[in-house]
Image 1 (cartoon, rainbow, N blue to C red):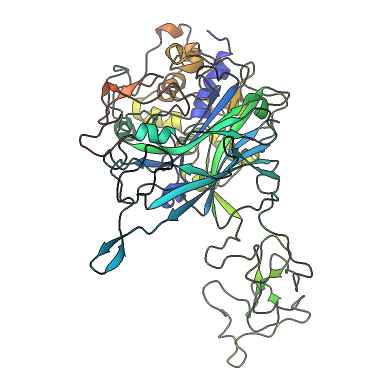
Image 2 (image 1 turned 45 degrees about the vertical axis):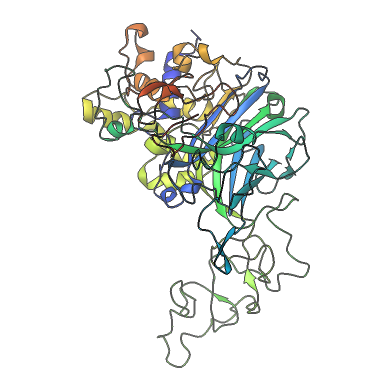
Length: 580
């Protein structure tokens, strides 16, 4: 077995996975439930174990949870106004050094049929069969495409370069339509596989691969009973319960990147995925949009604590009766029947109000014309080309069962370099107390200072980088050899397999059972081999198969041994739901 300090490893699994009551990161925070297209559900990072791909790392970011196969007629297209990103930190400071940036465009063809004496647009996404070739889409009413960029340095201001199709040089990639059904896409597996691209990555001597598309959900859990106050037998059979996510699909952003392109002097890298809502697209120069025009702004932006007013020529303090309110144009209107409010204070405003045809911008010191790329959007509150992060995910379930309810949206909007603000949730975890309330098992003493190191820095001797700054990211030691699927241990490091979770995460790593055993002390036990085999009953491994009802069935494998590793999505037609 791979030798790592028992106390340290216990801490990392509990803290980085944060488990027992879980369903990966599906719907983990109140805010993200409003924007399911931006909901990151699972993140995987591992040495590629496909034959002859050992020099690569695979990164999988899953989005858009709980997709029912029959979810038409519009199915599960990604958000055109958002940016989806996979970040890599190879300097251990909790800040991205590389960002892979996906942006989508959905092109509606407005296919029409002759009805009497006129052409009438159809209401469906297709009017005939699609595929199996990538370009056999004449019958498809909406086509999804995406661009992929690599940004070196800060994600919004660093050097941004376009990743291109190695075969054609094109900067645009096609996303396969979701699995409508077998009459619409008769050979879905072949059709989807045609969307796996070899790519040229600027600054990398070797190329990589990319795929974006619908896949079968690979996360396994007896979710219904687990969320019902763990209403199951944690000492029952390891394969005796239903996988409640077996009938769902997911959307996967998959990348395979050469190790030499990701790691620097230290072989340990950290990574996470984010989704950000916004308007427009980053400019090719690596900035959000064009620079402020020469001679603009025409008036300097006032101090941050000043607000605009309609009837003074500029800005006043927020408590001034002439200050513009958020719900009415003039909250001080009753202060004076003749003026609508008190007079502007002497010496104010400090700068004249800009012309009415100008609008404010967040990142220039003043105002620009409304047509300028940096103009603030009145409708969305976000300037074109700028984005607001709403989803963040690295290790599974940190936000779901570690972060307190009041801070879940805050965590989703945060960056790893600022994770010290969530320290209390690590030193004083509530999950062990919940287990005590349910089962009478006393928690370990607090503060859990042992968790601080492993939650934020990685495990010494396994995947802790030199000079690490505390930050919650998924860490992978890229020198750890990949393990073939048949030889992988589903319990990862605690099962003697150092290539598994928490040294990265593979699709077949059973993070639920790992955490159940660790949280109850298997690695502190004088006889780990005799420790109870705690389980949620829904087993996971690299070769597991479940039918769409969640029962074991060898004809329905969740994973495959080749990129992108997650399997063909389930089809809604013909019934019963099936898979090629």
